[in-house]
Image (tube, rainbow, N blue to C red; front, side, top):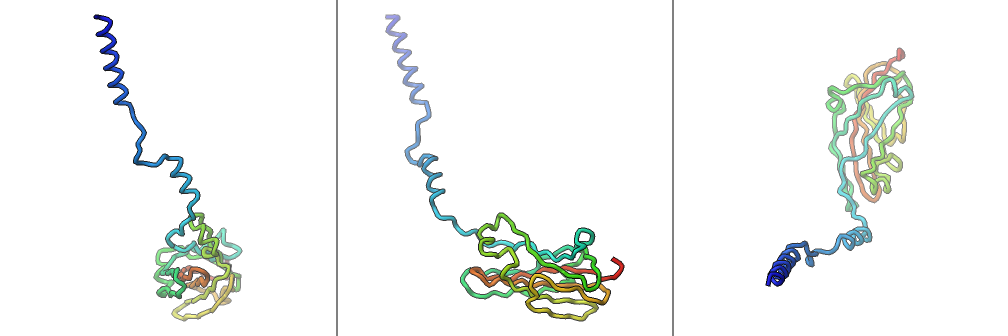
Length: 190
């Protein structure tokens, strides 16, 4: 009888342990299947965020770069044009560092490529290729406008502090516009 009791206790313990062991869930797909579905589904467009960083620099940019300030911007994915509200570059550049350059020196423009905007870069939305760049230059209260300057423009010949507002317009699959402010002090002594 002792042997039967031990077998009975052993059988109860075995049943208890097997009942408490983790069982696979039947209401959830296995991880492998979910991963395969994610890979095979078409990539979704990410929500449009901030446009890429815009840079205005000269050949002496390493010594005297200007800070940049992003102003208003807008995006439109439905094909309609959008217009970013205009900004005053003097306000945007408050407490920012101004660059320095010599009179007549070439100001070059470029934009950063951010990996988070991969699908935007495929449409050249974070580069200045295929974009229109209009510039407003302000010095001593005088405003001068330059339309569609391309990838560069020349600094003024007159020494002084110049504030700039670059309005970059994308007119591709996604239409958009962004304002960027920068400033240069122009002097022959640099």
